Image (cartoon, rainbow, N blue to C red; front, side, top):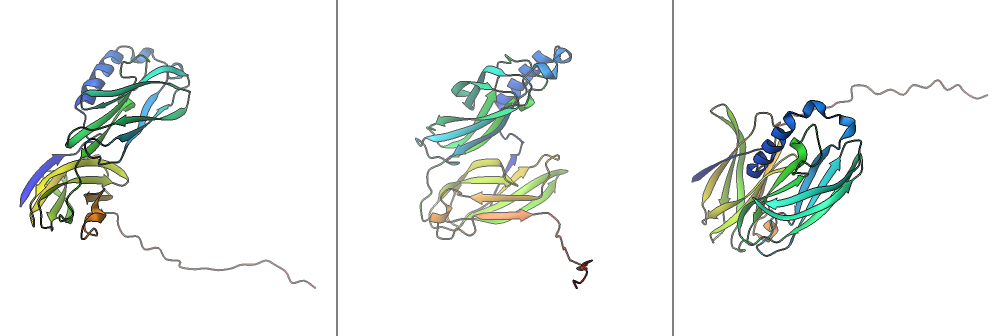
Length: 269
């Protein structure tokens, strides 16, 4: 049985993002006290979603980015950039009214298998003064994968949270119950938020692998799930064991102790 360890971060892939933030924050640090909140936009990348979530090479993928301006001023000619890794896919110029949000669709056609990081950044050139720029970028992990052969049959056999060197770790055990070797996408969600999506290396027939994700201490773990072959799992012989959900929330037992109907209604003569 093979074991692999990953480190889980809020925005998943932040290599380019860290340098982006460092540049912007450094440039703003000296002028922070001079910026008035009512005189500047307040940008935020609210969400980034890909359809399909696990595209195949050469398949056009729609990337929907939702951005907002929470400030009190109109923002004109604002740049919104989508990149994969360090490669810019497209850049749009948009306008955001005060206290408004907008969805912008991009189109991306991946050309190679593997794990990719889609990053959306608004006003990365820092053309507009802002008090806070940490929420100007958001990343989404995307797996590009071929469809697994129908003879493969993946399963998540166990999902648990363990402590390793004072670090919380989500541990998933996966297996190929099929008759042919194949790789497969894996997704990890905490609540409804997709936090990890990656391509699991080839699993041979009857092979089991353990994968561990280090979880930041600030992240609340209540209900989380791991899924194998999400897009095509129903083509497998047994799709019921591809999804494993763990719920750490305490059981709630609600009882009605008493029920009364009171009436002050008087009889009619």
